[in-house]
Image (cartoon, rainbow, N blue to C red; front, side, top):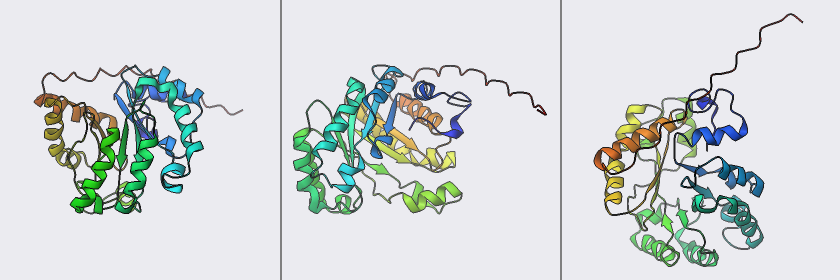
Length: 281
């Protein structure tokens, strides 16, 4: 996601054109979750514009379409997979990972199906898998089987940390909606590859969000010390301050890893266009 109405005039231009939205977002953050591809495979021409708006080292973590992961359950979707791979090809090296997000109803019984699916994927990409069934986290045997399925293709296991969010009841409309829609995921901090990916959901209250991510600051600093290249996506229920929070998290990690490069300074936004004068006719 790189466009939110509450970001207009803060992180994006006040009235951003379609080509400006990603370019302005990329001045704040150097990675993005490609969530729109879950709902529909874009045209390659559209994806080419994404590449044009970002630097070569910008990271896209692009989600596979739901027809593959949720409807076909990783089987019988060869045509849809081929169309998706063709569509994201213009991103080139910007494709940091292709993201296989599985529904909560995908249980450890489906691990063999996942393993077969991963083996069919081209090695031109890296892959990251997000599972949501609790047994993968609470059953040591199920966790080992999943790791064994990911290992042959060097796929990463993406944790979605919602522990800070569910630590206390919701206090806003956005939090109440997220309380219903977001999964209650056990905490997992183990990386399998040199490119771990973390998804974190905080609260609309900044202090609670920052307090909840403190453990991740140490984990990410440790990964960097090991030579890994982690990517962390920070969310809140309303996401109103997400780009600024991402930069704050990066700065907290830099305080422990002085050699980590700072994020670039955001590009100054153009002044909003003056409103048209009111007329009677």
